[in-house]
Length: 251
Image: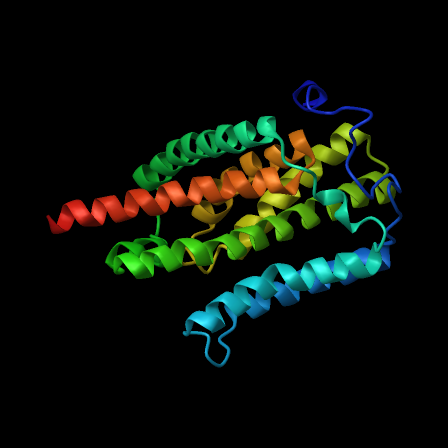
């Protein structure tokens, strides 16, 4: 396990916060961030007035990431930018590489789950093929803030867990990264349980595996834009294939 993580860990290119750089975030402050993450998630999944309108859909998608980010700015006013880095050409290549790796992993694992256990369809994705072309364009655009919100959720959970295992449980850096990586995947799978009809295997194994790949993009680059880009590319390919499949079925 250490060898797995060693090649992506650079002493001068470390994760923020757990080592008090660029600033310290206390346990109570991390609790505030986790509460804000939960609030952002509740706003996304709880019906609100005008939620079925275009403005309402964009509003909840934006609040999904805005509330957690606001809490991070509150507890780390001089260091919240550390999860964001400038995107270079190498980062763009990494986005596509991790997106395609994610597709390979999830399709492979998903096929086994469907064959031997059974899986539930994501109704939101399957419905995209039934939309008109203008509605499909809006769907693609609207997915961007929500997918970014999923990355904010995941990376903040990862960094909070990293500090927990490092500072509280006194684990080594490698073990802290590994455990935080797993906790992040489990948390991501958990929030997708309602989406997949509370199919625990599908949520934690298939979706959790996807999260492992996407979080690995952040672990390698320390840049949330890279994991976000990989996430968007991955999901847009799935949306596109769904639309293509629906078009062929109609033809």
